[in-house]
Amino acid sequence: MRGIPTTLALCLAFGLAILPAAAKAADPVAVMADACSGCHGTDGHSIGGMPAFSGKSADELKKFLRDYKSGAREATVMDRIAKGYSVEQLDAIAAYFASRKK
Image (cartoon, rainbow, N blue to C red):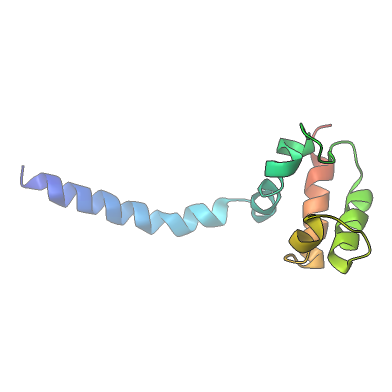
């Protein structure tokens, strides 16, 4: 019984020690793109009234996202969401969705 708290403490310490490595291993673009799935569906296959990303080229998606960011394209929410990303991040997200299966 005495060894259980020590074992738990060691497991916790080891788990916390490897968290930064696990976070680095995650694809940062995939993590950003995952935020889009709530409205636009996984891999850009929308199931609701939101536009689907699947089948669109990276250039087309870049234009949409950049236009939302600049305010050239009006939206209920996307203009505000796009402003939270840099142009480079938006371009990476566009490339990510363009590379997904259609």
